[in-house]
Length: 228
Image (cartoon, rainbow, N blue to C red; front, side, top):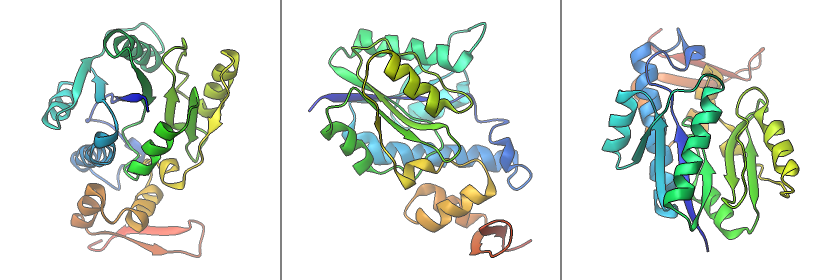
């Protein structure tokens, strides 16, 4: 069984998750991000060689260090900031963990399970990808022998599959309900409240008196604060 090094890019804690505003304040969104990262780390730490957070935000890096994570400072790039920063991270892994393959995760998938990582470790694929609900990428595994270029951005799932095929990698599309849920909207918070009762994120949302109910109207879930 090979080793995995996980890369998690985080731009910043402030002014993030703006689609959750005004449902959550800036301070609450910041705490939400911290809880989600803590959930990810607690669920994957025992199955991976290293977890690396890459960011240019000092607050993010300090919090990641408090969780015992390896931190990389983002370099300045003139364009395509996220993907170029991920390329820097991939180069760092290849230089320092020659016997490990690479797993890239976003910081907003608190429902990830240890069994999701075990699936990757037990399969011999060179490329495994899990889509988000909106055509994005919520898990990306690559064999570090390939010179794979990340394609994060709009509809990145399809771009990543195309990049894998360009390199003659055989894509393994790993459909997972829990991995598909990234937290961007109040509806996503509702899914977390329904399916993530043992998470730090659930406990935090519960402390804010946020609840979810079934809704037969336009939105499937009705997510609101009890005191409003």
